[in-house]
Image 1: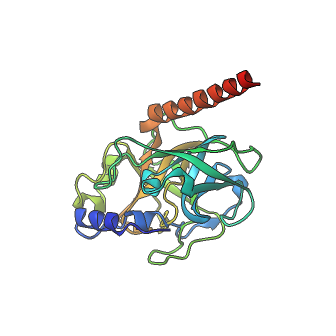
Image 2: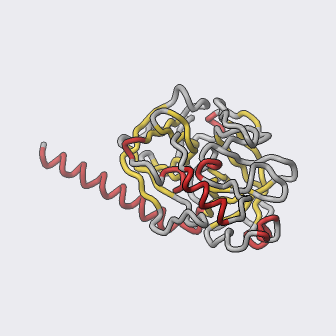
Length: 273
């Protein structure tokens, strides 16, 4: 993946050289101290790929729509990207489908990271199976203390670039933003904005580089999208996630837009025939 060092520098300056939530760090995250799972245990999980190299995770919202983090795709156009679904391994098997269009949240910013969500429209529909399923989005943020799990192919140890070939997961607990603000992030005011939630564990486990854009699932629904954090699995710095429920209206709008586009295309083809 091409590393945007400009974004890294901006973020580091913003939080006094401590934040490692840059595009470089979170776009290569792997689950730290996690466990291997089969794709059928997280069939909504996809690998977002840049010329067939894993860069981020994503979640299936419909057969043609994927949710991910905006910072994962801001520098790419759809033609450069594809997703692999239905495989425990990001390199092989499953279905590899090209991305047709990338839609960033219109108010996405890098410094600080805000509104870190994007929608990917696929060129052809995914064929659903036991290993490929959509996940509903949460209508509200999970309560503080709720159990959730995060999955991905990111690095397994902070400071390395070697990502996992096998899908990993770990269990976390949801933290509300006020509680999270009292953690190590209290040194960095204004980095926790509306539309974010935090999650952490009682042991040193977390999402890391390469897991960005991937799903945080609670109560069987997509509650969060891996966004950023300071380091990986640092007890004083919970992972920060995009709060999916905060953006549900925008997400639903993107889903409706895609559905109308597909319907119009089908009608046009029928008229031609």
